[in-house]
Image (cartoon, rainbow, N blue to C red; front, side, top):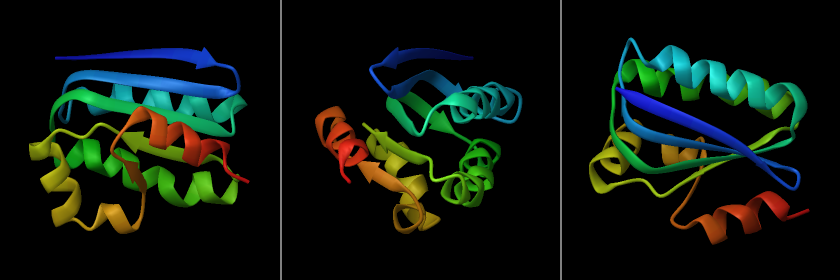
Amino acid sequence: MVAINTELIEDIHRISVVGEIDASSSIELDNAIKEAAKNHKKILMDLQQLDYISSAGLGVFISYLEDLKNQQIRLVVFGLQETVSEVFSILGLQHLMNIKTSEKEAIEFLNEG
């Protein structure tokens, strides 16, 4: 089960993920990112309450990397729990994505330049 909540904070589209992202719930993550990218250039992903992510969920992130870059949309994730962070690291996603420890760091990154 996953709950994905979105809100607009000034010019930043914030997506909060609570629970687990697996093959069936990865569609919800995909839809949330797709909607955010339609109208916003800054996407903040709060993963503090993401307990588990499957390869399907990771695939959603990977599938958007090039498109977001081409559209000059900045995506940053923050608050990875240790187990989720390990999965991101094993795949080398820390080299492909903007991953920050805290929300403050993530917002500062989005507001740079």
